[in-house]
Amino acid sequence: MALKNFKRLLNEAAEDDYWRNFLYPLRRYQFELSAAPLPFNTTSASDYINLANLQKQLSRLEVSYPDLFLPATGLLSQLYILSNSSSNPLLSIYSSIYKSNKQRKIVLLLKESRLIPPVEKLISQINLLNTVKVIVASQLRSLVCYDKVILIGSPYWFPKYVLTAPRTSEIDIVYYRWIRSKWKDEPVFIGSVNSSQSPINTEIKNTVKEVQPKIDSEIIAAKLEPKDVLMPTIDWSDISQKISQLHSVNSDREEIEAKLFLLEGSTSAVFLDREAKTFVIDLQEEVSSRVQRISVADIEADMFILLRTSGGGDYIVPVANRILKNSGKDVEKIRNLQQEWKGRLKLAVKRQGLHSVSQNLVKQGSKIAKNELNIRNWTSELSIKPRKEKDFEAILNFVGLGDRCNEFYEAAYWLDTSHRSAGKHIRKLLLQEVCNADLTQLEQLGSMEFELEQADGGSMTAFRVVDIAPEIHNISISKIAQIFEI
Image (tube, rainbow, N blue to C red; front, top):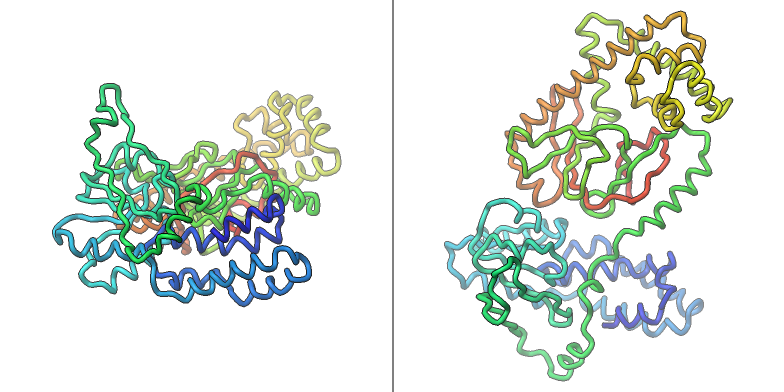
């Protein structure tokens, strides 16, 4: 409540960078200890709460914001008390589980996958609970059923299917009474029983009997909305503005249009070429079809995208080079020919501008060069050649290489063929890894590493897509497929 009142005092200033940085660890602490049965002094909380740093900020408040100094002092005092306490009323669920039938399949359902490791660590210390699984909502999309699901937090935080299409005969919903309940048992299908005949037994329990009546009544009178406890959503407009500012500073770099994806954990993101294809894992598909190579434009939230996280660079290029070499081709010559026509086209764009180059290519016979985006894609290192020979011929004539068309056609053909073969080879390796791996970690934690020993070293990691930026960004090609902190 102190945090809520403090944000109310800040009003619109709460969106300023200074206050957002001050409030972020407090909001995260409030959410995580409301969303998981962990002690208030859990080590996961100490990873991001720096009390010394917050105290320094507090000392500056006395001069800069004297009206906020006392409320902020009270807020940090409460944080200090809690962060040194080993209790948490949510811990009472463990004794409840222990008293239940030991043969039952019971799972704890958490809102965030990052909370699973500390909860599992705590459960492992209680030997009698080592059969309890900890999961996230996406794991309830499969056909696996349980005897009981214990949902931690407000039902508002979870997808509707958790309650409307339950994978269990019994669901316990456990949350603090100062979080207002939003969930109502409503019919899903025409002809379903109405609420007065509902087979669902709703019961509110107060397991902490020592709560003072005065404090209890004050809390009930001033509940928080479920969304007030959640972590703030990604401010895509703010991120887009900062990316635009960066773009204006580095205006001479080679760029392509890219989509921005937020990855599991909500702090990492990646740009992918919007016109390219990438590997994904779809856990809802049959095992033989789980690894697919789809268009970046078709990627949706909750899919798992595969990125090369060690070994560096594009995962297709080294395999394609090896295929070319094994076929007896001169890899260096083929790559140099590719760079020659692309380099001349890039230079023309830089000197004349996209519009002028577009007009010249149209005169040379390329109809689709009217769309300047096509020219931008042709200059990109991620594209091999135009799809139609007529467009390729127009480019080569325009850049002064028309007398060597056959030489460039052949080089582009072998590059295209080797890249396609490399894509199929990597998909085969990935499929083998996925078929042989226990994907529980991927489902639970939202990321998992796969070692591809036959793909020129390195490894690939699958990341769950949490969110997708609505805008398209012009990004340096060197930043594509590179994970960064958002």
